[in-house]
Image (cartoon, rainbow, N blue to C red; front, side, top):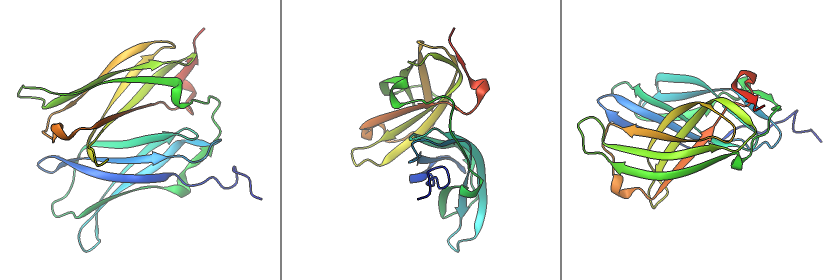
Length: 212
């Protein structure tokens, strides 16, 4: 039988979506899941493909992400200008370019503890709402960069909107507050669940150091 190394399963994409911000600016998002328990990737090329009703490609938004073994994460591109008259936005991982590898550092779900304070309406001219919470690094490593995705769901489990931010230099045992801001309005009264997923690239040796 072929081993997992020879045939890692492709990254699963449970959903992708786009969210209008203003004018022709949109946030693009996709939820990704790595079913492989031993292998992940520090080089995960992806593309959001924008098409019109006749299925012509109007724009391709390309990027590169990462994912650890068994991990769930989000890919979020913020304030992307999309062409007039687009019909659909789809997301895919460029499977034949994924560099599968076994990480030297295995992180589990409990290695980052998140506490979500919630989302509140802001009554000023610049921002409509903010989301706040804390992330605690429960590993014995210091991390150079933590990417934090915040996704708001309604009672029907549909996504209302998304946001992302980065946290620099989170040391072992350290707990720190994060904040994301939404300039544009969304149906805030419909928010039922706030999902916060912190991730870090365990395939970049420069990104983590053992806390001595």
